[in-house]
Length: 160
Image 1: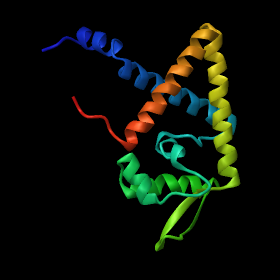
Image 2 (image 1 turned 135 degrees about the horizontal axis):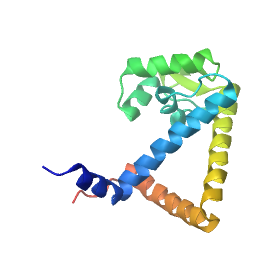
Image 3 (image 1 turned 135 degrees about the vertical axis):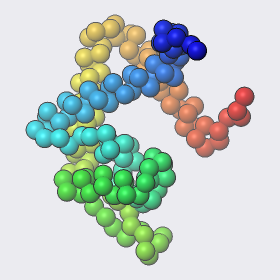
Image 4 (image 1 turned 120 degrees about the vertical axis):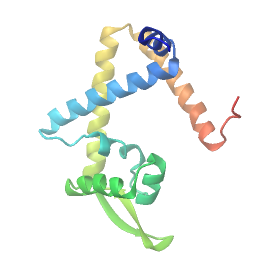
């Protein structure tokens, strides 16, 4: 059986693992800062997982559940929290008379911008702790990776 040390070594040598761990830590720190700014607990993991998919145009709750691989009930609970804060509204889905779309409101878009501002502050804090060219290079690399992963979502690469 492999040792804990060998697992740690394998994790620290894995680009994907380090990227996931950085994303998790950044997410937790950003949520904490956003909650301090808001003066209450607005950001929570169950809600923040939905945020990247919420737009003014809207998305069906069932599509959120599918994309996040969680139950419709879990999506409904998180959406209820957002609706109570006035960040989202529901409107009929024009493509399906029985369906509904969840759409960002003005307040929801403002909250999203506040979240981006918090991320910008964290970026500035990171840049002050490491040299700026390294952060700029990392950001360019992440944007390139993002582009490739977006292409892979449309046409997955062949498994090897």
